[in-house]
Length: 423
Image 1 (cartoon, helix red, strand yellow):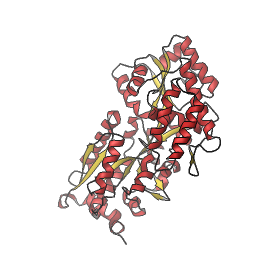
Image 2 (image 1 turned 120 degrees about the vertical axis):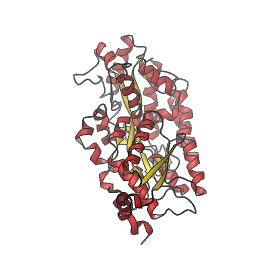
Image 3 (image 1 turned 90 degrees about the horizontal axis):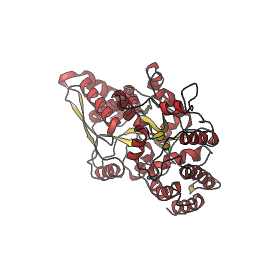
Image 4 (image 1 turned 60 degrees about the horizontal axis):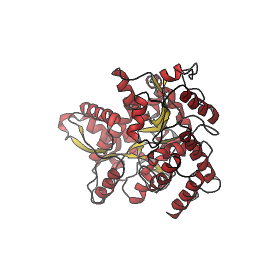
């Protein structure tokens, strides 16, 4: 029996109830969270530390999102200097497992946390799993959604009785809504991050999945008719740009600014921008707004999502003591059970008892878009995928000119297929 199994839940209990006589465990924490969700995570950390005063203290550091974070994790783990716990994108877990930088989450760990894999949506848990082994505990799912200006759509007569944008059920219907907004004098019917192909991957992959398209099939990229499905997705977005229904060459900050200023009536963005909207509206600086699942442009609903998860680094040459691991597991379990507050960052908590609670079901706009969890799709399960990964980089090169009318979608697909399979 290993050390974790011997101590498990008993070690956590000892840490929590032993009081001043027990030495305080310090848990070194790294995350990549900034902005509204960073503020909320810092609050959760403060709350945890207050609740565990004298027993466990989280020593938290926020690092730069994306490649810098993951490069630092890899190099630090290799020399035994990674943290005790860290946030991790589920999409990056296959590469992390290949690199040997994550410890598996064992059955004894789940028991010590007071959690169960059955508490989680199967698709979300699968995103944290490689070859049948779970390597992280999902904390949320964070899909993209459609934000909309209720005031502008109401003035244009484009809201349903339920207060939702008209035309969400078809390509023709949604395009007609965009055109009606333009005819109504709206400068930008929709704002999209068309200057950043890494971000647009999320939208394009969603539209592929609405056609049951796959990026990777049995080790081959864009096999069979999947290239045609990618072309369909690119084509509709390029058509919106050409018709002046979608912003052109717009970077991320400009996209948010177009929407919050009222120049754009709708915006496709991540749920992580919910705090931006809530805080601006609370300060009296924003119109009435809403957020809803992406429109069904093709055959059925499908929305890209990733998951923030908690992972334990595999520090080379350094064995974590049973007491330290017990403290780390107490952090993970506490965060899951208290993740209702995390929902105020826009994210959908991964822990089922929270999302099934009446408090969560009453939250807006979360309750409006949380149904999309039944239609979520995650990155292909490959070390080439994930945030700031090679797939993102290759596709980004061709997405930007295609979406902005400078490259034919069919040509882009052929180039993407060649470069991805060449990897």
